Image (cartoon, rainbow, N blue to C red; front, side, top):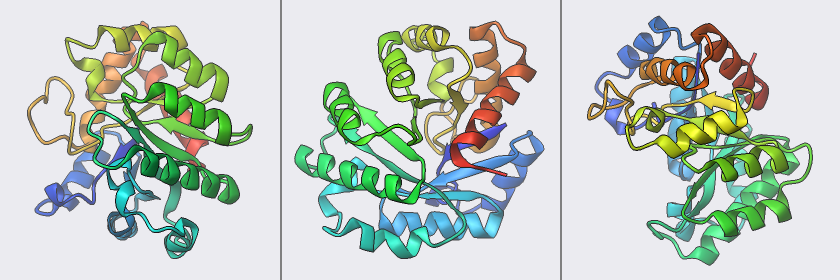
Length: 254
């Protein structure tokens, strides 16, 4: 299994990070991507990846877009030079919280998409309550040959079909799939099938059932894998192998 979206560098793991990584590997998690959300956080992600044999991403989350530098490429350059970096993001639009002005979110999203295109790196997208504007930007900036994932996908079947069919994006499936209220997500997963799906935790957030209410960690991706197998009516081994292969292809993992 691969945890394609974690925040192992988060302060929530400061007291037991080595044990968390060891538990993940004991649970069959072969690779983990620890994801940056601003410049300083991305630096911490890279340092964590180096220390624990993980991969990292460099990104500015839409919440932090208001504080992003004007010259994003120059600011990212020293971080992207590190061989631990496998992606750009997370980046996107979040109209649920609107912690940054929407024009700033769009500017920073477009800048990161252009940088990913120049660097031939995949993108990790965060999207919440902004589907129409987000898809419009994808149609402007996401050209054939680019790679990306909709992190923590919780949309409906129609949205899933657009992301997969029009843009060939992966869908990051996390603990929400196990929630009782997630019938729409389960329908979406069935609508697109296994091929475009990758597993994630978004730890320390969104722990799956039966760990709901606890601090999430990469080892818990096994619970999401089991639920995904149940939803798709596929053997667990097929789900773990298929999602791992999709994540390796997306992030060019060895």
